[in-house]
Image 1 (cartoon, rainbow, N blue to C red):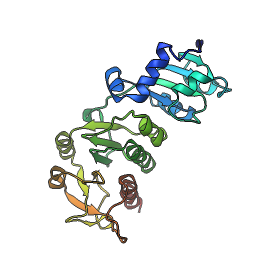
Image 2 (cartoon, rainbow, N blue to C red; image 1 turned 30 degrees about the vertical axis):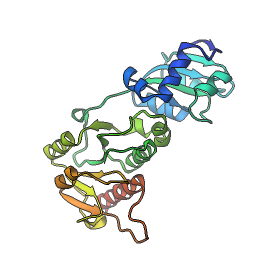
Image 3 (cartoon, rainbow, N blue to C red; image 1 turned 45 degrees about the vertical axis):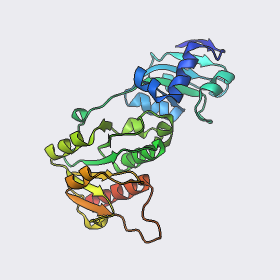
Image 4 (cartoon, one colour; image 1 turned 120 degrees about the horizontal axis):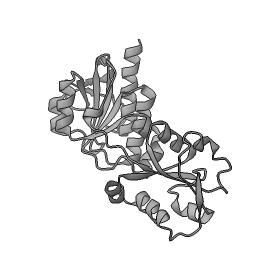
Length: 264
């Protein structure tokens, strides 16, 4: 149902979208975030998120039936091109964005397979890296991504964009490291920490059973708490002059090694 057209940049709904796009404090306070693009909004709907308002710019979007057909009760607001260009965080988003209510999943909400594969990221800073990790988690069939002591929020616009909708298809849980370690031990999930020191090559490590691959930041790596909690330390061989890969690249390599072992 279309609820009129917004042409003013001073409209309260426009101001709210801008605040959600720009301020993590506003996202935390309201529990809302913004999704842009037909594909991302579709993934969001399919994952059962609560859509508060859909904004469309008819000059950029000729057909909204593919979105409306997913839910007959979506509140849809048309905006002028000038207003949409102000609201949109990035270009080329097809004239559609939505204000969405976030989900706050806990470890207790996690339901995984009988032989789970999890990826744990400690103190991730860059939303683009976490988005890319979510894409790899989706592609590898990982059961969940657990983010411990994060330095970015899950609904940062850059994270949503870089995940290409994987933030909605893969359960993503925020936890502290102590609780996460206790959870993994309670469920008999083997902890493999990626680190250069005191470690074995990743392809010599058994990942066929219940496994959590744990990654730290590129600058400082994992904290001592995770190193001591590990059942095994693994590393990717570095044959060049640098001693590390981008954390999202490393996560993809390790996740798909687990896939290779489980399928062979």
